Length: 117
Image 1 (tube, rainbow, N blue to C red):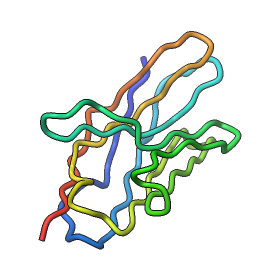
Image 2 (image 1 turned 30 degrees about the vertical axis):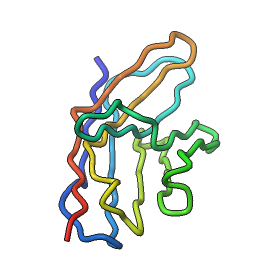
Image 3 (image 1 turned 30 degrees about the horizontal axis):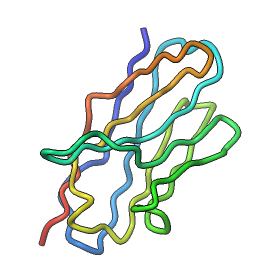
C-alpha cells in the first residue's frame, strides 16, 4: 500500500518562504509523476506543480517564478519550495502521485499553509 507523508506547512507572513516535503512509501509500479495540489476554502482543488521522474515540470501560472518543485527519485520524495508567498497562497496543500500506466492516484493527508500578517 502506498502512503504519502507530507511535512513543512505552517504560518508565514506575506513575502516569506516555506518548503514542503512529501515522501512516498510502499511499492509504486510503473511510470509516475509526483506533485502538489492545493485547495483553498470554498474553492476547487487545483494543480500547483508536478514533476516527472526525468525532471520535467508543469507549474501553475499563479505560482511561476515563486514556487519551485524538485524531486529525489532515490528517496521517493518531492519538494515544493515556496518563496514570495502571498495571502492568496493560503490553502491546504496535498501531495499527489499519479501512475501514468494505470491512471492511479495517491494522495497525502494535506498540510495547511497560511500566509497572513
